[in-house]
Image 1 (tube, helix red, strand yellow):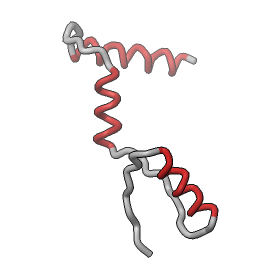
Image 2 (tube, one colour):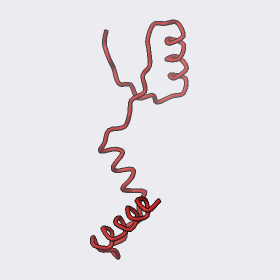
Image 3 (cartoon, rainbow, N blue to C red):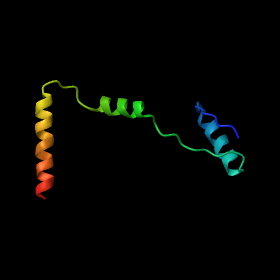
Image 4 (tube, rainbow, N blue to C red):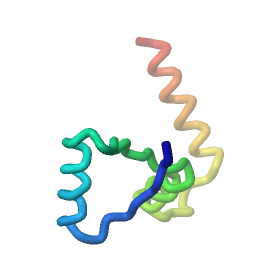
Length: 71
């Protein structure tokens, strides 16, 4: 058995691949994004701000933990 990574350029190619799967000739397994790709997506979605200090972040984490423990 051989494993390949294929980038599909045309929707017609996807239909061909689906037909090969239906015939039982191949199987398709979706790949999960790497940690680096997921981190990059997350980082890009966050606002860029340096107005908050590390201590303020730690204080907020402590407050959330206190609220959870009180519940």
